[in-house]
Length: 50
Image (tube, helix red, strand yellow):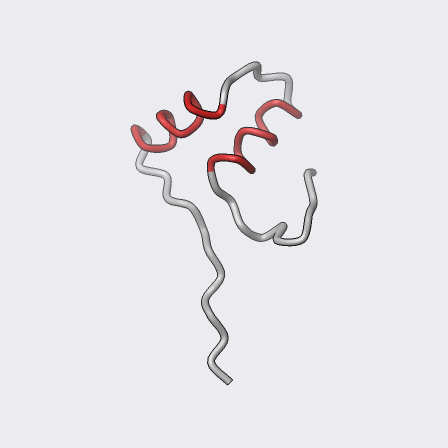
């Protein structure tokens, strides 16, 4: 699994890296288009209010 500072955020870049790690040769723009067509939204952490 690809880990970096914000490993809990899944966007088109992270999905692209995960698919390439699984031997799916796909570009980042194609990944974004597939996510849009499948209505997959990215997950972003909430801002902490304290």
